[in-house]
Length: 149
Image (cartoon, rainbow, N blue to C red; front, side, top):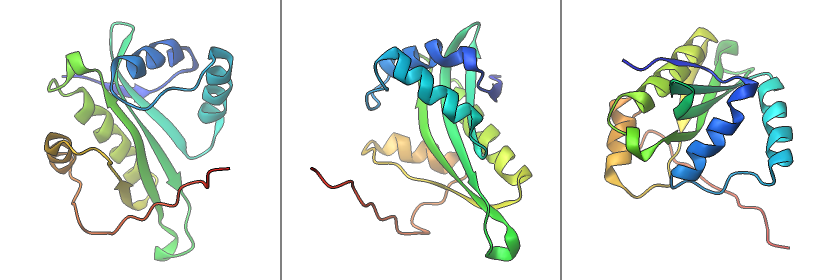
C-alpha cells in the first residue's frame, strides 16, 4: 500500500516532473521562480503538501491549507488543492493515500470540515473524491476571477 508523507524541499524537481506528466495547469516557471514559491509554501504556517513516492519519484500529491476560525467554537477548516496523480499510477491508491493523509492532518488540527473543489468534467474524478469521503452538493462554490488588465 502506498505511503504519504509531507513534502521536503528536495522534492521540488520530482514534483515538477509530476505536474509536467499530468494534465494540470502549467507549473511556475522559470525554475528559480518555482524554487522561491516552493520555499515560501513550505515555510507557510497552515500549508502542508503531501506526496506519495515510489523510490525517489513522486507519483501523487495534494496540498492542505488549514485556517483558524473564530466561529464554530474556534474550530478551524481546511482546503485541499492541487490534487495530482501521475497518469501511469492512477488506480493504485496513491491519490487516495495523499488525500487520506491530508484529511487525517486536518482532523488532528481540529478542523470541523475540509473543502475540495474540482473543475474537472470527468465523472471518474468526482467518483474518486466521493470515495475519499467528500460529499457533493453540500455547499455552493463561487469563484471570483482576477480582472484582466
